Image (cartoon, rainbow, N blue to C red; front, side, top):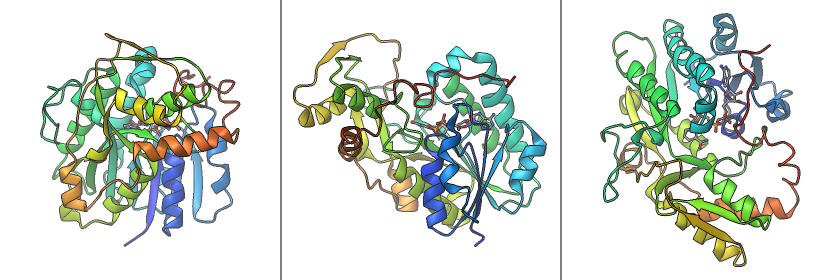
Length: 334
Ligand SMILES: NC(=O)c1ccc[n+]([C@@H]2O[C@H](COP(=O)([O-])OP(=O)(O)OC[C@H]3O[C@@H](n4cnc5c(N)ncnc54)[C@H](O)[C@@H]3O)[C@@H](O)[C@H]2O)c1
């Protein structure tokens, strides 16, 4: 097996954790990223590693893609405008990157002698489901946001390429991420709730009864390695929900986990927020096909973050809001 990968979008929240994991596992890692959030510091620790190469640029630029592909046999597609709020705020950039850019990148990867292409999608594709049901990979998709609609379009594009591409694609529908990372994102539920309450701020929680699946960033890194190393027959043109039932939770469940550690924290509740997503997810396929189960719980993620906050690791996060969350971009670049 050739242990080399290109991570497109490898400098964001999940990318550096994956980079670290794969370098430790003996992989050669190329990273292509546009550094939209001034997240250059996230790749600095790897620049002196002879098995790592950083290529700055836009995934829409085929010359840059060509350079980034040199010497690699597997591609992991993480890049994009990530999340409902930022795609709503920048619909044109979202269309350029998440629709046109991703689809042409998927096509460009054909004929390059690649082994596997892993497209990272989202469980947000399920949108709103009946509260007594668990969505497996065959559950009808009803994406509610521009963000999820682009993911669904890219999934469909990849899946209809059977027989037309020389690489083996796999789609991973990620749960909402949590956990420590160099580009710590505090615009994600578990991370945000923990930090706000740890700082003694009153937290307003919308629609506390709504379900979502969550997954630690280190578990995502483990899963991606498993997909790269699995027999082709198990992963070719397959879609997997990525996570585990143990981390299906309501927002109230997350709050309760935090309150058990911070009993004096102040929480207010409100119904009918702007984000109606409510979905519980079935992870049987990834468990039974790949033997994947998360190692880390939400409780673990809250505790590791609290420890870091108490040691003043994130004291300046409010001053670096856009590094710590997907709020503002300049695109196209000036
Ligand atoms: N974080 C989550 O909770 C979550 C949940 C489900 C799915 N996902 C998926 O996981 C992937 C990574 O998420 P993340 O949280 O690390 O996101 P992120 O926003 O932290 O990272 C995305 C990276 O892509 C880069 N990028 C954006 N447009 C680019 C372009 N045109 N060319 C090159 N690079 C570009 C950005 O600079 C950034 O470094 C995404 O595909 C996302 O949809 C994430």
